[in-house]
Length: 421
Image (cartoon, rainbow, N blue to C red):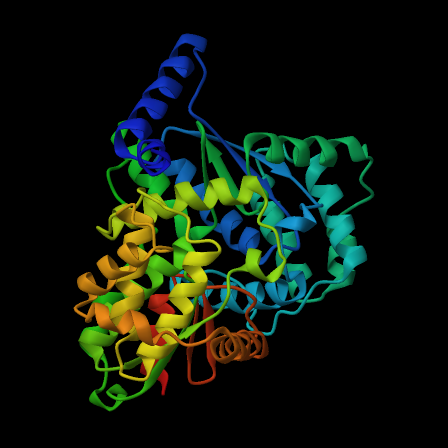
């Protein structure tokens, strides 16, 4: 029953109902189509966003209201140092992809300069020139030009309550990240989700009918120009049985490998919760709805979920590591992830696992050959340590050569990495 309830909550019917209700309420209140944008000066993704939002506002009949935040919930980021370092590298890649300004030599900005910038921009958040000023201030920050930041950010007489109110608003609406847009009940963080917003606004008849921010989804076209020498190269995927994004990642990576001839190597790791790390409910809820919209655009089913936490994960890991010896682990983990995230199958039981094996084209007799825990657990931990040493903290993470790429939406960067080697 629970899996059917989740399927309804994440389904198209409920989404349409939520959106129509929000639109009806807006009309009754005679309010404009307002989008709230949460900005943070030392967020590299925010630096990209302020460069594209003026164009978005010009193309659509919308009002964008900036709100500056500074302190984000610490419990949402299990490894903040790695996340910060990775975000800078990732923003550099995105800037190249979209032709935006971001220094390739960027490093973590000076903290005092950041504080000055956030307070200055908070004072200007209702100014029509906010985006151009924020871009200029951010450019100085990321170039470590503290003198320019001081010159641009004249003494700001601002009550700290402004920042606190904005942070409270972000949490109250149901999110935790900056560089983030909120429109009528849904969040669109970073350039990666702007295409979802564009499609929504176009359906409301508010825009030009075009979608400009979907370049990250066009990686399949890049496969056509890959050199034949990539055949046989190894693409590693650090994967978790319990991660919804890993479900998407393994199916997309398998498709890429099948077309390009790249060898896909799955490196399973234990879920965060089974390693003593909590996933806050706000984050879990956003991931659920975000995975659904990402799955929808990739034509993958999602929603009938039976959480594989605990016994299902242990049994899947024990079986998956054994099947890897026969080259059957990819088919198994693909079938497993679809089973637990889209088909409502309980993978903690013999019956459920037998169904998974049948869908993967593997004999159910393999159930009896699962690895003992004292063999597979050290292997899973070794994979986790490899992931950390590569600069990532979570799944799904791709590694191709010296490049480490986090997220199921980084297949375009995988293709770019293949082209460069």
